[in-house]
Amino acid sequence: MLVRWFLLTTALTASVTVVASGGALAQQPVRPLPRVGGCPLGYFASGSYCVPSKGGNTRGAIEKSGNSCPLGFYASGNYCLSSPSNEREAIQKTGNSCPLGWFSSGSYCVKNP
Image (cartoon, rainbow, N blue to C red):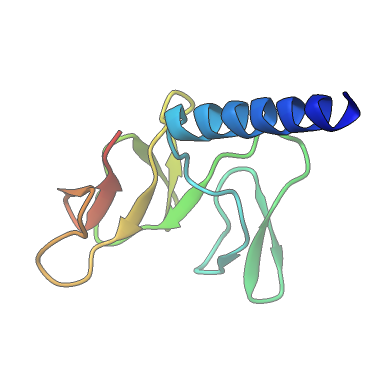
């Protein structure tokens, strides 16, 4: 009986994990960024990096390339910050195209929903 309960619990946990991770959209990661001038809103300078503040409201950011930001992002100095309603991840475009599963947005590639 105990073995059957363990197997049932393990199967249910695995099912919930797969469903929860499969349906979620990726957001821009909140992580330290190379420092390029002043840090974006919600980040502070620490040596050669801009480090996310611990307030919990910090948005993911990407270094700004040119004069514009990708879809779902807004400019903050030399960076593009993810808008509060944005649930997509962006990377800087290398070459003329984006990887499979991403679309072009100016000088960036944005992950498809």
